[in-house]
Image (cartoon, rainbow, N blue to C red; front, side, top):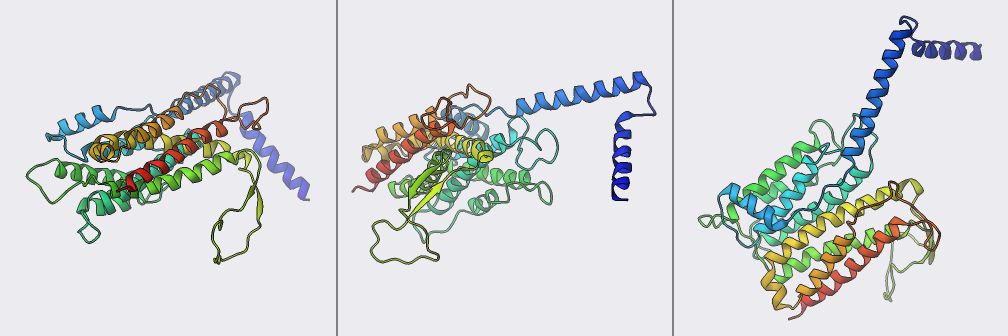
Amino acid sequence: MFWNSLKEKWSGFIAIFRLPSLGGVGRKMLLTLIGFVVIFILILGMYWSREPVPFSVVQNNALKLTASGNAQVVGSTTTTTLIRAAETLLEKPGGYLSNDIMLPGLYLDNIPNWEFGVLVQIRDLTRAFRESFSRSQSQSTEDLDLIISEPNFHFNNDSWLFPPTESEYSEAIEHLYSYLSRISDPNKVDAQFYSRADNLSNWLLAVESRLGSLSQRLSASVRQQRINTDVAGKQIYSQSTPVRSEVSVKTPWLQIDDVFYEARGAAWALMHFLNAVEIDFKDVLEDKNARASLSQIIKELEASQRKILFPIILNGSGFGIFANHSLAMANYISRAHAAIIDLRSLLSQG
């Protein structure tokens, strides 16, 4: 009985594709149309999967300040760069893809992971703006625009309705524009950007942590035996659950390209932010003799953005015959991570 029922349902399913109501010409035209639609979706998906190209933070700053009619001030370059990075998420080909429920965005995953890498850096920098860059001390009042902008960027990154993610991020960008207008207007003193070594060091601490995590996840594309160093150097400690002293770590095969593109997005955003910081914190960096260290970090991040010559992210073993894109990316991220540690050390010196 069960098999007869299943056979009837399957026969009905096949009959749909036989298109009995159409003649031979009609079936051919319909199948041709379906073929063109599939090809169009695939080509559009390939176009949408292109990563945005880097931009000049100096030219971007000049354009946005010209549009607002204000002059360049300390903090304007970092602010306009943050705005441009956020706008890129929404305005690149295909728009914001992380919350798409229609083709071709539905099956694309590389760019959504790239978007998330950029978004994490945007979130960290807006938090630094709200907590450090815009405040003279810990007891000073928070900026009214940043109070709205910072939490809006922390809104769910894949909400497609009620409200869509794009509307929350667009509102955050609007308040960043308002903050930019206020700090670059000499007649308004209620908004400030403070270029200090401690402010920069606090943000770099968050960047250091993000890059350290990305480096470990990228390296795990090849199975590794790792010694647990979570409590290394601690004589007295306690933790919620016991762990083994040695663990085997490997990123699942289907997540290799996800981690890779997340790291590409993070490096893309961070490269621009540090270029802007080099301008706004120029005096601080020269005072601490730290410009060379910052320039080295930027060079490592720029190298991580080299064009990928193979259409698939390969996961070869470390010394095998096939490339391992994740290990190559981990090299640049790890070097940038180490250079940030050195930079923070220089900034902390009296």
